[in-house]
Image (cartoon, rainbow, N blue to C red; front, side):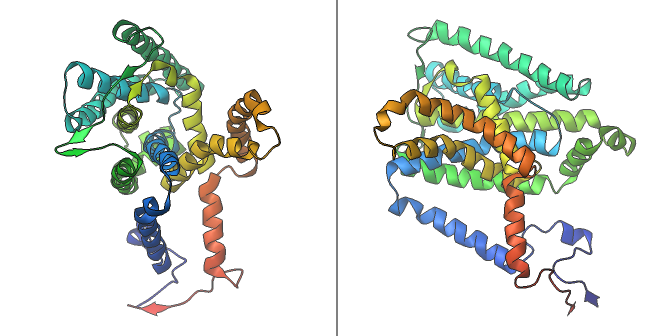
Length: 358
Protein backbone atom coordinates (compact mmCIF):
# COMPACT_ATOMS: atom_id res chain seq x y z
CA UNK A 1 0.00 0.00 0.00
CA UNK A 2 1.45 3.32 -1.06
CA UNK A 3 1.34 6.36 1.12
CA UNK A 4 2.30 9.98 0.68
CA UNK A 5 5.79 11.26 1.34
CA UNK A 6 7.04 12.17 4.76
CA UNK A 7 6.01 15.80 4.32
CA UNK A 8 2.30 14.91 4.38
CA UNK A 9 0.19 13.55 7.22
CA UNK A 10 -2.35 10.99 6.07
CA UNK A 11 -3.62 9.53 9.34
CA UNK A 12 -4.46 10.44 12.93
CA UNK A 13 -1.46 8.48 14.17
CA UNK A 14 0.89 10.43 11.91
CA UNK A 15 -0.53 13.72 13.15
CA UNK A 16 0.37 12.65 16.70
CA UNK A 17 4.00 11.85 15.88
CA UNK A 18 6.43 14.23 17.57
CA UNK A 19 9.72 13.46 15.81
CA UNK A 20 8.61 12.41 12.35
CA UNK A 21 11.96 12.59 10.56
CA UNK A 22 15.08 10.56 11.41
CA UNK A 23 17.28 13.66 11.55
CA UNK A 24 15.00 15.17 14.21
CA UNK A 25 15.68 12.24 16.50
CA UNK A 26 19.41 12.56 15.86
CA UNK A 27 19.25 16.30 16.57
CA UNK A 28 17.44 15.79 19.86
CA UNK A 29 19.97 13.14 20.82
CA UNK A 30 22.87 15.47 20.06
CA UNK A 31 21.27 18.26 22.09
CA UNK A 32 20.85 15.95 25.08
CA UNK A 33 24.45 14.75 24.82
CA UNK A 34 25.68 18.35 24.60
CA UNK A 35 23.53 19.28 27.60
CA UNK A 36 24.99 16.45 29.68
CA UNK A 37 28.56 17.42 28.75
CA UNK A 38 28.01 21.18 29.14
CA UNK A 39 29.27 21.59 32.74
CA UNK A 40 32.63 20.06 31.83
CA UNK A 41 33.71 23.11 29.84
CA UNK A 42 31.68 25.89 31.44
CA UNK A 43 32.26 28.31 34.27
CA UNK A 44 30.04 28.50 37.34
CA UNK A 45 28.69 31.86 36.17
CA UNK A 46 27.62 30.44 32.81
CA UNK A 47 25.97 27.48 34.53
CA UNK A 48 24.23 29.94 36.85
CA UNK A 49 22.70 31.67 33.83
CA UNK A 50 21.63 28.34 32.35
CA UNK A 51 20.07 27.36 35.68
CA UNK A 52 18.05 30.58 35.64
CA UNK A 53 16.88 29.68 32.14
CA UNK A 54 15.87 26.17 33.19
CA UNK A 55 13.88 27.55 36.11
CA UNK A 56 12.21 30.07 33.80
CA UNK A 57 11.36 27.28 31.34
CA UNK A 58 9.26 25.48 33.96
CA UNK A 59 7.23 28.61 34.68
CA UNK A 60 6.97 29.51 30.99
CA UNK A 61 5.59 26.07 30.13
CA UNK A 62 2.92 26.59 32.75
CA UNK A 63 1.83 29.88 31.23
CA UNK A 64 2.07 28.39 27.73
CA UNK A 65 -0.38 25.64 28.65
CA UNK A 66 -2.85 28.22 29.99
CA UNK A 67 -2.52 31.05 27.46
CA UNK A 68 -0.84 29.48 24.45
CA UNK A 69 -3.00 26.35 24.28
CA UNK A 70 -6.17 27.18 26.23
CA UNK A 71 -6.33 30.86 25.29
CA UNK A 72 -6.93 32.13 28.85
CA UNK A 73 -5.11 35.43 29.41
CA UNK A 74 -3.33 35.71 32.75
CA UNK A 75 -1.38 38.57 34.28
CA UNK A 76 -1.01 36.83 37.64
CA UNK A 77 1.75 34.35 36.85
CA UNK A 78 4.18 36.07 39.21
CA UNK A 79 1.72 35.48 42.05
CA UNK A 80 1.80 31.73 41.38
CA UNK A 81 5.59 31.86 41.58
CA UNK A 82 5.26 33.68 44.90
CA UNK A 83 2.86 30.99 46.17
CA UNK A 84 5.46 28.31 45.51
CA UNK A 85 8.24 30.37 47.11
CA UNK A 86 6.37 31.31 50.29
CA UNK A 87 4.93 27.81 50.68
CA UNK A 88 8.53 26.62 50.62
CA UNK A 89 9.47 29.15 53.30
CA UNK A 90 6.62 28.11 55.58
CA UNK A 91 7.24 24.37 55.25
CA UNK A 92 11.02 24.64 55.41
CA UNK A 93 11.65 27.33 58.02
CA UNK A 94 8.74 26.72 60.36
CA UNK A 95 7.84 23.05 59.92
CA UNK A 96 11.33 21.78 58.97
CA UNK A 97 9.96 19.48 56.26
CA UNK A 98 12.34 17.86 53.75
CA UNK A 99 12.79 18.90 50.15
CA UNK A 100 10.98 15.89 48.68
CA UNK A 101 7.88 16.88 50.66
CA UNK A 102 8.06 20.65 50.24
CA UNK A 103 8.14 20.83 46.44
CA UNK A 104 5.09 18.53 45.93
CA UNK A 105 3.28 20.44 48.67
CA UNK A 106 4.03 23.71 46.88
CA UNK A 107 2.67 22.17 43.67
CA UNK A 108 -0.55 21.12 45.41
CA UNK A 109 -0.94 24.55 46.99
CA UNK A 110 -0.50 26.18 43.61
CA UNK A 111 -3.10 23.86 42.09
CA UNK A 112 -5.66 24.75 44.76
CA UNK A 113 -5.09 28.49 44.34
CA UNK A 114 -5.17 28.00 40.56
CA UNK A 115 -8.59 26.39 40.92
CA UNK A 116 -9.89 29.42 42.80
CA UNK A 117 -8.30 31.87 40.38
CA UNK A 118 -9.74 29.95 37.44
CA UNK A 119 -13.33 30.33 38.62
CA UNK A 120 -13.72 33.84 37.12
CA UNK A 121 -12.68 32.39 33.74
CA UNK A 122 -16.05 30.61 33.67
CA UNK A 123 -17.76 34.00 33.37
CA UNK A 124 -15.09 36.38 32.04
CA UNK A 125 -12.95 36.37 28.94
CA UNK A 126 -10.47 38.64 27.22
CA UNK A 127 -9.53 41.83 29.01
CA UNK A 128 -11.97 41.17 31.87
CA UNK A 129 -10.26 37.87 32.62
CA UNK A 130 -6.85 39.60 32.50
CA UNK A 131 -8.07 42.19 35.03
CA UNK A 132 -9.40 39.47 37.35
CA UNK A 133 -6.03 37.68 37.33
CA UNK A 134 -4.32 41.03 37.93
CA UNK A 135 -6.53 41.61 40.97
CA UNK A 136 -5.61 38.14 42.20
CA UNK A 137 -1.94 39.03 41.79
CA UNK A 138 -2.21 42.02 44.09
CA UNK A 139 -4.25 40.08 46.66
CA UNK A 140 -1.68 37.29 46.89
CA UNK A 141 1.24 39.73 46.97
CA UNK A 142 -0.48 41.60 49.83
CA UNK A 143 -0.71 38.37 51.84
CA UNK A 144 2.94 37.55 51.08
CA UNK A 145 4.03 41.06 52.07
CA UNK A 146 2.20 40.78 55.38
CA UNK A 147 3.80 37.43 56.07
CA UNK A 148 7.28 38.69 55.22
CA UNK A 149 6.86 41.78 57.42
CA UNK A 150 5.86 39.59 60.35
CA UNK A 151 8.42 36.79 60.12
CA UNK A 152 11.48 38.32 58.46
CA UNK A 153 14.11 40.50 60.09
CA UNK A 154 12.43 43.59 58.61
CA UNK A 155 9.64 44.46 56.20
CA UNK A 156 12.10 44.77 53.33
CA UNK A 157 14.47 41.92 54.21
CA UNK A 158 14.03 38.53 52.66
CA UNK A 159 13.71 35.17 54.41
CA UNK A 160 16.64 32.79 54.01
CA UNK A 161 16.29 29.04 53.58
CA UNK A 162 19.01 26.37 53.55
CA UNK A 163 20.17 24.27 50.61
CA UNK A 164 17.90 21.28 49.97
CA UNK A 165 18.94 17.70 50.53
CA UNK A 166 17.65 14.41 49.12
CA UNK A 167 18.82 11.77 51.53
CA UNK A 168 22.61 12.03 51.71
CA UNK A 169 22.77 14.21 48.57
CA UNK A 170 22.96 17.96 49.09
CA UNK A 171 21.83 20.03 46.12
CA UNK A 172 24.28 22.90 46.19
CA UNK A 173 26.47 24.57 43.61
CA UNK A 174 25.79 25.39 39.98
CA UNK A 175 26.74 21.99 38.45
CA UNK A 176 24.57 19.98 40.85
CA UNK A 177 21.61 22.27 40.36
CA UNK A 178 22.15 22.15 36.61
CA UNK A 179 21.81 18.38 36.36
CA UNK A 180 18.86 18.32 38.75
CA UNK A 181 16.97 21.01 36.83
CA UNK A 182 17.88 19.48 33.46
CA UNK A 183 16.39 16.11 34.42
CA UNK A 184 13.30 17.71 35.94
CA UNK A 185 12.70 19.99 32.95
CA UNK A 186 13.12 17.05 30.57
CA UNK A 187 10.36 15.11 32.32
CA UNK A 188 8.10 18.18 32.53
CA UNK A 189 8.60 18.91 28.83
CA UNK A 190 7.83 15.32 27.85
CA UNK A 191 4.72 15.47 30.00
CA UNK A 192 3.53 18.71 28.40
CA UNK A 193 4.23 17.44 24.87
CA UNK A 194 2.18 14.32 25.50
CA UNK A 195 -0.57 16.20 27.32
CA UNK A 196 -1.34 18.49 24.38
CA UNK A 197 -1.73 15.40 22.17
CA UNK A 198 -4.41 13.91 24.44
CA UNK A 199 -8.08 14.76 25.00
CA UNK A 200 -7.41 17.70 27.39
CA UNK A 201 -4.87 19.24 25.01
CA UNK A 202 -7.23 19.07 22.05
CA UNK A 203 -10.04 20.44 24.20
CA UNK A 204 -7.84 23.37 25.24
CA UNK A 205 -7.02 24.18 21.63
CA UNK A 206 -10.71 24.03 20.70
CA UNK A 207 -11.52 26.42 23.57
CA UNK A 208 -8.71 28.73 22.47
CA UNK A 209 -9.94 28.85 18.88
CA UNK A 210 -13.65 29.27 19.67
CA UNK A 211 -15.08 28.39 23.05
CA UNK A 212 -18.73 28.62 21.94
CA UNK A 213 -18.13 26.11 19.15
CA UNK A 214 -16.16 23.90 21.54
CA UNK A 215 -19.07 23.85 23.98
CA UNK A 216 -21.48 23.05 21.16
CA UNK A 217 -19.30 20.06 20.30
CA UNK A 218 -19.67 18.73 23.82
CA UNK A 219 -16.49 19.98 25.47
CA UNK A 220 -16.94 20.71 29.16
CA UNK A 221 -15.65 24.30 29.41
CA UNK A 222 -15.75 24.36 33.20
CA UNK A 223 -13.63 21.25 33.59
CA UNK A 224 -10.97 22.10 31.03
CA UNK A 225 -10.61 25.78 31.88
CA UNK A 226 -10.13 24.99 35.55
CA UNK A 227 -7.72 22.18 34.63
CA UNK A 228 -5.65 24.62 32.58
CA UNK A 229 -5.46 27.10 35.44
CA UNK A 230 -4.54 24.36 37.91
CA UNK A 231 -1.79 22.98 35.68
CA UNK A 232 -0.38 26.44 35.01
CA UNK A 233 -0.36 27.31 38.71
CA UNK A 234 1.19 23.95 39.58
CA UNK A 235 4.15 24.41 37.24
CA UNK A 236 4.60 28.03 38.30
CA UNK A 237 4.58 27.06 41.98
CA UNK A 238 7.15 24.33 41.36
CA UNK A 239 9.33 26.88 39.58
CA UNK A 240 8.91 29.37 42.44
CA UNK A 241 9.72 26.72 45.03
CA UNK A 242 12.88 25.62 43.23
CA UNK A 243 13.95 29.23 42.72
CA UNK A 244 13.58 29.81 46.46
CA UNK A 245 15.87 26.87 47.17
CA UNK A 246 18.28 27.88 44.43
CA UNK A 247 18.67 31.49 45.57
CA UNK A 248 18.45 30.61 49.30
CA UNK A 249 16.34 33.71 49.91
CA UNK A 250 12.71 34.66 49.36
CA UNK A 251 11.56 38.26 49.17
CA UNK A 252 8.22 39.56 48.01
CA UNK A 253 9.93 42.37 46.07
CA UNK A 254 10.96 39.84 43.42
CA UNK A 255 7.36 38.96 42.46
CA UNK A 256 6.20 42.15 40.82
CA UNK A 257 3.90 42.78 37.91
CA UNK A 258 7.04 43.27 35.81
CA UNK A 259 7.87 39.60 36.36
CA UNK A 260 4.42 38.60 35.12
CA UNK A 261 4.96 40.69 31.98
CA UNK A 262 8.34 39.04 31.47
CA UNK A 263 6.68 35.61 31.44
CA UNK A 264 4.09 36.86 28.98
CA UNK A 265 6.98 38.07 26.84
CA UNK A 266 8.53 34.61 26.97
CA UNK A 267 5.55 32.90 25.39
CA UNK A 268 4.99 35.70 22.85
CA UNK A 269 8.60 35.78 21.72
CA UNK A 270 8.84 32.00 21.77
CA UNK A 271 5.59 31.44 19.89
CA UNK A 272 2.08 30.94 21.24
CA UNK A 273 0.81 27.38 21.22
CA UNK A 274 4.23 25.75 21.02
CA UNK A 275 6.11 23.80 23.69
CA UNK A 276 9.38 24.44 21.86
CA UNK A 277 8.45 28.12 21.69
CA UNK A 278 7.99 28.26 25.45
CA UNK A 279 11.47 26.85 25.99
CA UNK A 280 13.12 29.09 23.41
CA UNK A 281 11.32 32.18 24.68
CA UNK A 282 12.36 31.46 28.27
CA UNK A 283 16.01 31.18 27.26
CA UNK A 284 15.86 34.29 25.05
CA UNK A 285 14.15 36.62 27.53
CA UNK A 286 16.17 35.36 30.52
CA UNK A 287 19.51 35.87 28.79
CA UNK A 288 18.55 39.14 27.08
CA UNK A 289 19.41 41.49 30.03
CA UNK A 290 22.76 39.77 30.57
CA UNK A 291 23.55 40.02 26.88
CA UNK A 292 22.79 43.74 26.88
CA UNK A 293 24.96 44.25 29.95
CA UNK A 294 27.78 42.35 28.26
CA UNK A 295 27.53 44.52 25.14
CA UNK A 296 27.78 47.71 27.20
CA UNK A 297 31.05 46.44 28.68
CA UNK A 298 32.70 46.91 25.28
CA UNK A 299 32.00 50.65 25.35
CA UNK A 300 34.73 52.98 26.60
CA UNK A 301 34.28 53.96 30.24
CA UNK A 302 31.45 51.49 30.59
CA UNK A 303 30.95 52.41 34.25
CA UNK A 304 29.33 55.69 33.17
CA UNK A 305 26.36 53.83 31.69
CA UNK A 306 25.21 52.14 34.89
CA UNK A 307 21.70 53.61 35.01
CA UNK A 308 21.40 53.55 31.21
CA UNK A 309 22.06 49.81 31.10
CA UNK A 310 19.19 49.14 33.50
CA UNK A 311 16.80 51.26 31.43
CA UNK A 312 17.81 49.50 28.23
CA UNK A 313 17.38 46.10 29.87
CA UNK A 314 13.86 46.94 30.97
CA UNK A 315 12.88 48.52 27.66
CA UNK A 316 14.34 45.68 25.60
CA UNK A 317 11.63 43.28 26.77
CA UNK A 318 8.88 45.61 25.56
CA UNK A 319 10.67 46.23 22.29
CA UNK A 320 11.00 42.48 21.72
CA UNK A 321 7.28 41.97 22.31
CA UNK A 322 6.37 44.70 19.82
CA UNK A 323 8.84 43.55 17.17
CA UNK A 324 7.77 39.92 17.34
CA UNK A 325 4.08 40.83 17.25
CA UNK A 326 4.67 42.98 14.17
CA UNK A 327 7.29 40.95 12.29
CA UNK A 328 6.96 37.37 13.52
CA UNK A 329 3.73 36.76 15.47
CA UNK A 330 4.44 33.03 15.72
CA UNK A 331 7.73 33.69 17.46
CA UNK A 332 11.03 31.88 17.55
CA UNK A 333 9.34 28.51 17.06
CA UNK A 334 8.16 29.61 13.61
CA UNK A 335 11.64 30.84 12.70
CA UNK A 336 13.02 27.46 13.70
CA UNK A 337 10.30 25.66 11.70
CA UNK A 338 11.08 27.65 8.57
CA UNK A 339 14.79 27.03 8.97
CA UNK A 340 14.17 23.32 9.45
CA UNK A 341 11.91 23.21 6.41
CA UNK A 342 14.50 25.01 4.27
CA UNK A 343 17.21 22.47 5.02
CA UNK A 344 14.73 19.62 4.71
CA UNK A 345 13.79 20.67 1.15
CA UNK A 346 17.18 21.95 0.00
CA UNK A 347 18.12 22.36 -2.80
CA UNK A 348 14.47 22.32 -3.95
CA UNK A 349 11.88 24.94 -3.21
CA UNK A 350 9.30 22.23 -2.50
CA UNK A 351 9.98 18.78 -1.19
CA UNK A 352 9.03 16.26 -3.90
CA UNK A 353 6.45 13.59 -3.13
CA UNK A 354 7.77 10.07 -2.83
CA UNK A 355 6.02 6.75 -2.32
CA UNK A 356 7.06 3.96 -0.04
CA UNK A 357 5.53 0.56 0.52
CA UNK A 358 4.74 -0.77 3.93
